[in-house]
Amino acid sequence: MKLEQSFMDFMLHHQERHKRTYNFLVLLEAVQTAAKYIQYFYQTGSLKNLMGEAGITNVQGESVMEMDDIANGIVLHYLRRSNQVICAVTEEEADPIRLNEDGRYFFYYDPLDGSSNIKHNLPVGFMFAIAKRNLEGPEDHHLRKGSELRAAGIFLIPTGVFTLALADTGVFRFHLDETMTYVKPDNTERLVMPDDPKGWELSFNAGNRKTFSAKVQSWIDENESKYAFRYMGALAGDFHRLLSNGGMFLYPAIVNHPKPEKNRPKGKLRLLYEANVVAFIAREAGGLAVNEEGDDILEMKPESPHQRTALYVGSRLLVASIRDRLREKK
Ligand code: AHM
Ligand code: MG
Image 1 (tube, rainbow, N blue to C red):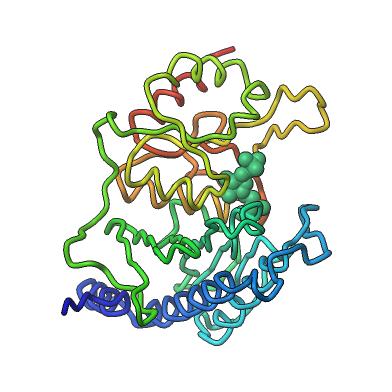
Image 2 (image 1 turned 135 degrees about the horizontal axis):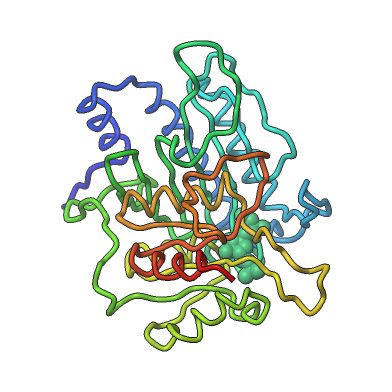
């Protein structure tokens, strides 16, 4: 019988090795418990008629799925119980939520990313990013930049894989086993995106292609034939694949839509709980992420909780290549 290392054991050793507090462990215990409940509801959701729309729209005017709502409630419940979070920002609520004034962490999350996959029971993701409050003086509650994050992760649901990036430490993967424990298979080490372009893939919504800027369209025209193309419509899933294979996921600004009211000059994805999560994981795996100006996603100063950004994330060399094009004058 093969007994693998549990996620909590991995974290305990990590904290001890780095002489850190146990507060972070308590928070991650709450986070993984929430993920398991989401996993359970998602797996059996179709049987209970839970995969439809909730009949409400969120702050961003998007229709909320019942499962979005359930997942959000589960995460908030466990965050609150942990007593570790001073303030949470969730895709599902307009304003940041103050949870525990003594909490040491800010928690930014999308409880169920990839909503269009829900009614098909296809992969979605619980994505999160963690930053530390100011421990030296009064806390001003500013929204943290990606470069200030201490950790970010994605639970792929119902696949049962959890990817966690820890600041200056690397990226690790855990799998749900038969006992609903996240474990790290012994033969896996720190995850690094492959340098070899042979397996690289491109991932973007090809239906939007003609709406991208001329620079982005020309880059795609010149480069696409070198790589395979994959897109499942959930950043969590598309990025998951990319981390192992290398390549680039892009959700560019939409600036040439035939119906100008449908343009999205700031892109679609949200900075705090989508773009920053994958950008931080990419950095810890040797990759890079930039916005429409070619600037590092992790250096963007958040101005509002649901701020959007264009996103180019993946293997360093490939992202640098489109970054150079984005930065060209005209
Ligand atoms: P959501 O948070 O409402 O699910 O939206 C985010 C999702 C991402 O997971 C995915 O990459 C993108 O939207 C897909 O958008 P599109 O349907 O335009 O390709
Ligand atoms: Mg989302």
